[in-house]
Structures are given as C-alpha cells and as structure tokens.
Amino acid sequence: MARITIEKEGRIALPEDYKQRYGLEGGEELVFEPVEDGLALRFARPHARRAYVEVTARCNLNCAMCVRQVWRDAPGEMSWETFKIVIEGLRAFPDLRRITFGGFGEPLTHPRFPEMLSLAAGLEVGMTLTTNGLVLDEAMAERLLDVHLDTVVISLDTVHIQAYEQARLEKGVEQVLENVRALRELARQRGWMIPRIGLEFVAMHSNLEWVPRLPGLARDLGASFVLITNLLPHTLEMAEEVLYDRDEPLPTPIGWPVPSADWLLWGIARPPRMKWGAWRRCRFIEERALVIGWDGGVSPCYALMHSYPYYIYGRRKEVSRYMLGNVREQPLADIWTSDEYVSFRGKVREMRFPSCVDCGMACTFAEDNEDCWGNGPSCADCLWAQDIVRCP
Image (tube, rainbow, N blue to C red; front, side, top):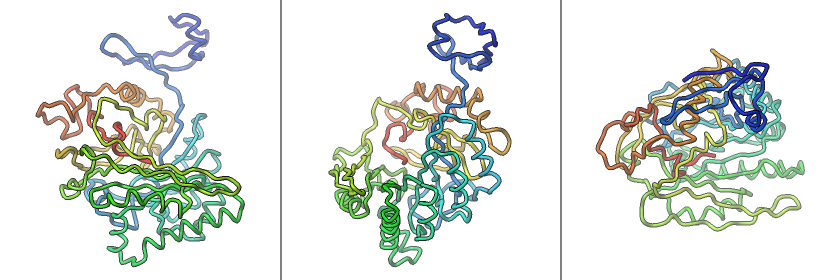
C-alpha cells in the first residue's frame, strides 16, 4: 500500500477529464492499495456522513440477550472531556448528516447526557436516540425537545419486559409507554412534528406472536416505524431462540395511520432478511458511518466495537474489538483517512471476503473472526451485512 500526493500544479498521471470528473485538487491525498489484478486508488477524504456515539456502556436493565452478559470489556461511561473531543472532531466532516446516540448501554443514564445533546446540537445535524425509555420522564423529554432531537427509537420486546420484572419494575411496560406518550404530547403542545418515534423489536421464537401486534402498539404510541431484527445470541440458551434460516416466513405486519399535526402519515414495519444469501452489503460502510466507543475508541461498526462471543448457525465464535484509533490520541479526521481505515472500507464495500456460512469446509478460522483469505477481522459471516441483524 502506498500513498501519493497530488501536487499543487495538478501533476498526476491521469487524463485531464479524470481530474474534473472526480474532483481531484492540488494537495489532496489518495491511497494506493494492491488488489489481485493491480492497484486500487482510494480517496482519503473526511467524508463521513454518520456517527454512532456510545456515551455509556452501562445500563439500567440486565436483559438476558444482551452482549453485556458475556463480553470481555470493562463497562464505563464517556467523560465530558472525551465527548467534547468527539464533537470537535466531527466538525471536520462537512458531509456529516446524523449522530446516533446508542451502542450497548443506555444513553439516558449518563449524568451529563442532556448537556451532551446541547453540545452536539451545535453541529446542526440530525440526532437519533436509541433508548429503553425507562428514564425518559417529563424533565428529560423537555430537554430532548429543547435541542430538537428529531428521532427517538424505543427498544421494546419480551426480553425487555422480563428485565423489567427482574429489576422489580412491576409496571415497567406501562412506564415506558406512558413516557413515550408524554413525549409526543409535549411535542404536540409545541406544535412540532418531531421527534419521530420508532420501535425496535428483537424477534425470537418466544415472542413471535407479538409481531402481528406491533402495528397496534406503534399506532397507540404515534410511532412511524418499527424496526424488526433477528436475535444475535451470545449463549447456547439464547441460540435456541433464533428464528432466521427457518422455512416459515416471519409474519409481515401491515402499515398503520400516524396522525401528526395537520398531516396523516403512514407507519411502516421494516422486517429483517430471514435467509443467508449471496447478497451482502454493509450499511455502516455504505452510509459512511463510524462508531465511537465510550472510551474514545473508533470502530467501523457496532459488530466490532466490543469483544464478545456469539453463536451463528450453531457455531461459537469470538469477536475481538477492532479499533482504528482513539480520539484522545489523534484527530478523528486523521483516523478516518488513515491507510488502514480507507483500505478496510474499500474491502468491505467490495465484500472481498469468503462466505463462511455456506462454504461447507470445516475450518476453524471463523471461530476467531478470521477467514481463509487472510482477513482479520473478517466480515465473512456477518449477519449485519445480510440484513438478518439490524440496527437503527
């Protein structure tokens, strides 16, 4: 791999129309990457469009399906200083369109989360919050509205309900639903159509009967979409709950009307794929997304932001955290445009990985998230790239 610099005079061995077509300017850096039949030339531009920020890896629930049951990482929460570095770093990305506050913790439990939202609002981009909704009380709802948070995704399924009971929250479901209704009412009083409300539902054998009921629940809450995902099991017990790759199709919920001020919107359910196939694409790469952990570590996707085991088609595998850098040690734009990160995005965009799930060989590479083509980490059996597992 080699990097070249286009001189200010524009001297480069490319036809003139290429420079105009691809916007090549003097002083711009590109990365040469060796591929099977030659060299790939890739832009090293700060052109990220979306940032996922994990402000905390702690949670107020203890869900049986959660990665936090088995991961090898120490939980923690992002310091105010680190968050300020993150926001300042994101200013270097002119194409940035959205920040999603999520990860594997509950963002609303961070003691300075409202202040974080206020600081992030200065970027003037869309902001999404993924939450279990338990601490989304009226005071928090007002703060969310004050900074014009435009999308709130509520995680709600039977495993969450079991976690409410485990935490001795006798009316946990009612509390979440009431919090969401209160948020909608406060927005209505301001005459706003935002925030848009969505539900995230993890489909499993034990809650399959819930799927046809989701439109009714969404309509009651004024939710405009329901994101249905398959389970990523981290234990053998949870592996028994997996629905994907079965012959029966997942029930497809119909749409529902969503009144919004003087408008009538139509809510939709977004089901996952249920079978492994040749089609593979990474939404994180396609959306030019980056993921920032609570400690400032930068990863390319949710799947690689922590270290943990999970089961796929009955096979156990170990995922190790893959970091391209840390915002506390180098500028975010430098991490994004580094040779390693540019090359990784190119490899994933072209899906230069084998298909481990239907390979038929009994190798052990995939057990350590590697593959026989020499990739590590490998996306060879990534369920996100199949749209079998989905994120907001």
